[in-house]
Every structure is written in structure tokens, then in C-alpha cells.
Image (cartoon, rainbow, N blue to C red; front, top):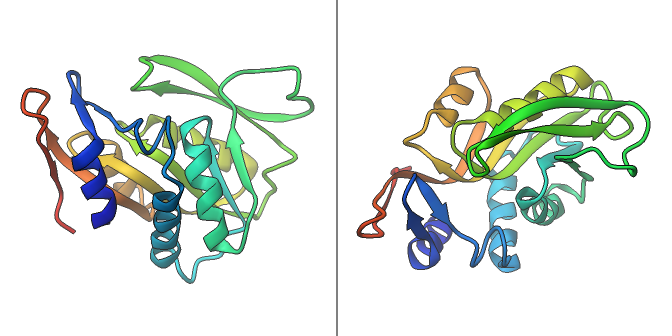
Length: 194
């Protein structure tokens, strides 16, 4: 998606350690108009698929998932929580994922009330690097007996193996921008051609 690539080039900051900082528009301050265009694009890419719900992980995926849901008939958005709390009651689906950004493992939890066997879900998140967060969501879906219709990613780090692993496993992965390389010294970002 050219609009997203241009925004990454303009406002993204490349940091050492393969970190791409996009907090000016994606995961701290949110550009809702851009999110709307991203939702339109995912709706086009996943046209014809049954989507009953959108599933994401807190926190950065929530905004884009909610705006995207408008383009899928206002389906509910469920977000996996990263910590147990007193608000999480009853039966739960729980797994653990390793965060590339946070450099640690954490639980992901969804109440069994919100994922029902036979439902068709679209997974959405802001970034895909090594694929661990998506693997965690897929595991929750497997436990719940729901069908993963597709995976929508805002920014995929194409030089890491998460995207390749998910595609090889047969998932319909649609990333709106795939970064092929980034240089923290020059700030240069190269994208994979569509």
C-alpha cells in the first residue's frame, strides 16, 4: 500500500537492532484516516471471505483492528490481553508469546465467551517480525475451534522469517507494507515490490 509506505518513509525512524519506530502515526499517536484506508485495503484483499470477528493483541493492534472492522460489516473486535486481571473471569484460552519489541515472553489471554467454535476470524496486528505473536493468536484460535480466514499486517519486516513461516504454513497473509531492509545509519528504508 503506497500510502503506508510513503508515511513510513516520511515519519518512520530506523533504530539499531532492526527496530522501526512508527509511533508518530501507528502505535502511539494514531492517524485514523490512514487506519481507515488500511481497513479499506484489507477489505479488498479479503473480499469474499467470511469474517465473523477480528482478533488482535493489545495494545497496538486494537486501533487498526477497530477501524478495519468498519469495512467488514462492523464485526466485533476481540483483543487478546497480555496480563491476567480481576476483570478476566471464567474460562479462558491462554498461551505464551515472545515479543520481539519487548524482548520477553508474556501470556496472551482471551475469554472463552468471545471465541466460539466454528467462527471465522481475521487476525490483524501492527507489525510482523518473527511471527511469534501471530503464532500465539493462531494457537488460541486452534484451541477455540475457530477458522483463521486470513492475517492482516500493517508492516511486515520481510528480512525476518515470520511472514515466510506463516505463508509456508498456508495462511493467507496480507501485509500492507513489507520492509526488505532498513539502515539505522542513513535512515533508509527499502520496501518489497508488490
